Length: 530
Image (cartoon, rainbow, N blue to C red; front, side):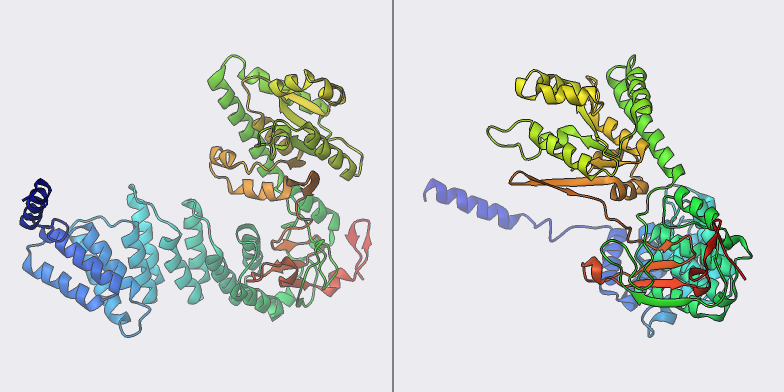
């Protein structure tokens, strides 16, 4: 026999003599039970899972742990949608939970969520809320989530127990858990059904803040409220006649809402239509706003940018950190009359990754000139560029005159060595509330800002993207209006409805208004009345 044949024969003998570890894994009784329960959970076989559980309890040979109970409770809660299994799932689910507690096993968030769902399916919102509150009071590593509170909140709303629903929401607010559309819609619906107009107003604004485009089901709830008798009876008690007050509030809030309550008197008119590419409602001709961040949010954003910029700089040179960035802040305070900030490096290096590529000053010049011409006040933008790059450009005779002209006219600011110019142009754009021209998506900045949800809204309003196609520049300006629910200074509402079609022009908008307000002239900033 050849040596190779001997080796193959030996390998074959060894492989046949050794057991297959993957096929014959020896498990202890606890592991075997968990494996079988997981299999039942995947196939939604409740009866088999309960039989396994009962056998384990009867034998006393298996030490039940948190994972066993969690799997069983999840399966029970998953079966409540099946009418043939609902009663069994609820009854046995509570028995299993009681057994879990009696064993001294502390339930985690997933187990509490399952129990809350079982209680809500039974119509017992009080118990669904109680288990969550008890869980929160104990504390620990596991914390409640939206799904933990949702069963109790939705149960209360379905049973028209509005005050209890509001209590759940307050508990969620205290835990730092934000509502989503399903929960806000439920609270809106119960508020409308119980005639609580102030709560309806509050939840309309929560939809505006947290949702943006609403689903068809939510639009029906809104439509039913405004068509209802109660909505037509609401008056503004004279406060709504002060248009100037609401206009100032709209500006302070960043546009798109005033928050001063219902405006006008009489019945509401609800129509569905479209909005033009410029943001004009084709139903009532009102211009929609491009919603910006409010003053408080913006200032917090600016302050956080300063702190982060100085912190990064301090890691490199602690002595100069505050001084260097403070110099830029002082300079911007004196020269800060800009409508646009330009990320010079991002534009100059755009599409320059080829053999003879380098920093393209002509590209940067094209952007600067285009912004100047687009400015209604003939204002130059501000370019932020690292001092090292500026020095290199000044050493090039071809570029020197243009760069010197920019510097002398306050169009170019050179960021100091050791600094990240990203923080400079981002700070300038935020501080001056102006446009920022860059293709940098600033994902690292979002991370540094702890994933602020505010940042995405800020980018949508202020960031300008660009492209160069065969040397021709195209600036992609922010949309002239925001596709979010809006409340105008006149008291009308415009509500975008989610659609499958990606074409914005085909999106359905709800136009909600009162003729008593829109048709009345204004005198000295107030609505004229009879």
